[in-house]
Image (cartoon, rainbow, N blue to C red; front, side, top):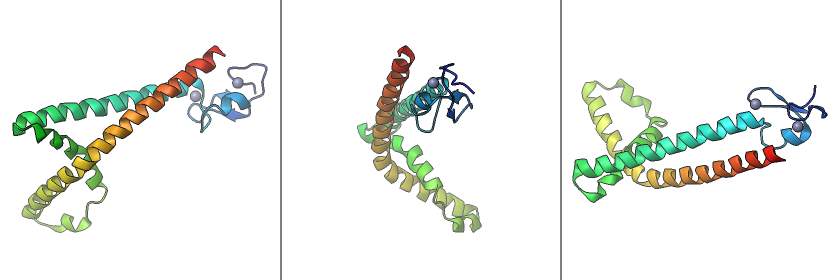
Length: 148
Ligand SMILES: [Zn+2]
Ligand SMILES: [Zn+2]
């Protein structure tokens, strides 16, 4: 089988996503081996995911400030990220509680989510920004290898 991009080269790997045949050079471009189309798709997906997260956070910050009528209201924007972190560690004991237990559980969770969110949001924003610049570099690499 020949490389999808180089008809004169023997394929030594396949794209991890679509199974396209790749030669040694093409197969070692990305880890795991990925063809250029799939790498572009991946880059686009991650980029739009990061943009979505950043937009959601900014919207929540504005909503937080409006709702609390306080500049520090932007800290409420961390709640969804704190909440999703808590979802991973929800103790099973709460599942046995009657309705009032659920209400208390919900309130406690909301407060903890808020506290975690204050730390989690800046970390997330940092990670997203870093991810976006990583993706930009990946897209440059793809563009460069297309020219070569
Ligand atoms: Zn592929
Ligand atoms: Zn090749």
